[in-house]
Amino acid sequence: MINIFDINEANTVIQRINNLKPDASPLWGKMSVDKMLAHCNVTYEMAFEDVHPKPTGFKKTLLKLFVKPIVVSKKPYKRNSRTAPEFIIHDSKNFELEKVRLINYILKAISLGEDYFDNRESLSFGKLTKNEWNTMFYKHLDHHLNQFGA
Image (cartoon, rainbow, N blue to C red):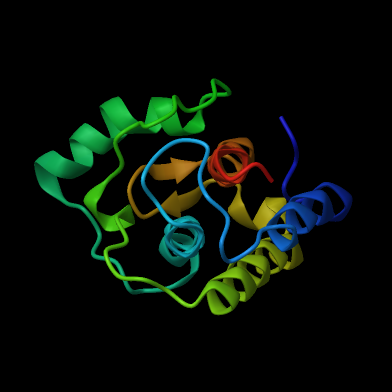
């Protein structure tokens, strides 16, 4: 698994993001490239911003028991997998703005370093190790960059 906290490996991911074009078509799925970038930003919003409600009760239990193992495992996501409602982007977005936001989030994670994330609370999954954070960040980005051939 790529270490998204390593600047050299992150730069490779950032280059893939920079290779995206506003008119890129997905190889699978329904999202436009601007919505995909906004969708990828949600993971980082949940890590850094207070803009998404924290799941509680039964929903939090379901996320920990059933979704977390999928998100933090090394097994790639299946094409056309269902996503959580918080990750569904309904409106068109500004491609350049979303691209810059995503790159800045990646750089913020690098500047904080992997140790910052070790045993840090995830909005949806409780405490995660730095390796689980890495897997969650990288695997999601890689899945969607592959979706757009980047």
